[in-house]
Structure formats: structure tokens, C-alpha cells
Image 1: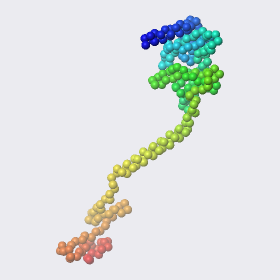
Image 2: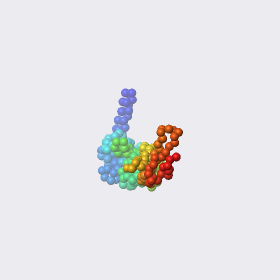
Image 3: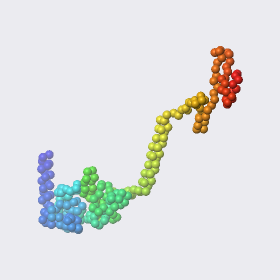
Image 4: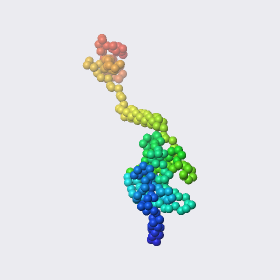
Length: 267
């Protein structure tokens, strides 16, 4: 394993030696420090902004700088061999943010297709305008678990194979009106369930209503409830005669004003 590590290191050193030095002025950086194409005097740039001058092919190197979770990689520019395809790098063909081609689904407006003014979007949210193919680049923003990736939009005639505009345009934006209606329906159902449950609990837990026993009035008459108020009712007292069960019974006389339907003369 030591020999393999040494061999890889030697290969990397050889490749770095083949790269043109920064002093050659063939490393390019798009959009920094000035709009348009700038000579990159340290050959260190974000992936989507790095490229090489005409006649040089681009190779991405290791990380050379980090900021806000974003990364810049070293730019390796090598002289193109005669007759071979010469890829100058993504910065030469990726649309710049000011061109308004980079798009982002859901930010800053949730249900809108937003023009991405920094060509940096979450994975699966970036895409490109009509006529451009999408390529996801390196990390351009990181905050906690939120990671953004650079969006490279290249004209379809400069990309290979199918011209896919990106994952952010695979599904239509959500319909906020429909979502609002669904939310209201769910809220009404939940409130109805809560209120119904509260009523059932109240009915089950409240003490059973029992009729109050009749209460005697000041003159000894029984007071019974009638229509929301108590009215006097005369009750005859039944007494036994000589405690003889076969001797019959008689009603105690309440006087001449008695309304009792049973006559006081006895039975």
C-alpha cells in the first residue's frame, strides 16, 4: 500500500508539473473580480467559474480555498494536443448568473420558478432555462445540513448526449390554492373531532341528574315541583286501629278545607 501511495503521489506531481503556471496567464475566472472573463492570477476558482484560455484544456484540481461552506479548486490548464478535443472548462460555456438562465425551484418564492441570481441551488432544485442543459457542480454553499451546489447551464449544442434541463423542472410547482383548501378541510375535521370528543366526555363524566325529594312546607304539607315551582299537596295520614291488622283503617281528618279526593269519613 505504501508503494501505491508513492506511485499516486508521483503521478499527481507529474500532472501538476504539466499544468501551466499561474504566471502564464492562461487560467481564467468568470465573474471575479470583475464581470466577464478575468485572468486568474492564482489559478484557483469555483468550478462553474473556472476555465482556460483558447488552446488549453481544463482539468479540475484539489481544493484551494473554502468560504461559507463553498469550495474553490485549482485550475490546471494544459496545452491542447493538435487534433484532439480541447475542453476549456465549465467557465467557458456555463451561463453566468447575470444572464438569467439559472433557475431554482421553491426559493425565494415557494410555488414559483425563480431565476437563480447566484447559480447556486439545493440538490434537486436547480435547473436551466429553455435551450440549456444542466450540470450540477461543486458545493457552493453550506450551512449546517443545508448544502447548495453550483448550477452550470450550457447551450444544448455544446453538451453531449441528451439535453436535460435539470431536476428542478421535473415536476410542476405546487398549487398553493389547492394546498390551502386541503389545509382548511383538515383543520375543520380536526376541530370537529376535538369538539365532539369534549362533548362526549362531558356527558359521560357529569353526575347523574336525580329528582330532589319533596320537602315539607311551613304547615307540614308536602311541597311538590310543578312547572318550575313548588306547590303544596295534602297527604292523608293512615293509622291503624288498636294495632289490629284485621280492624280496618281510617284517614286522619285534615279539616274542612282539605282538597284530598279521599273522604275523611273512613273506609
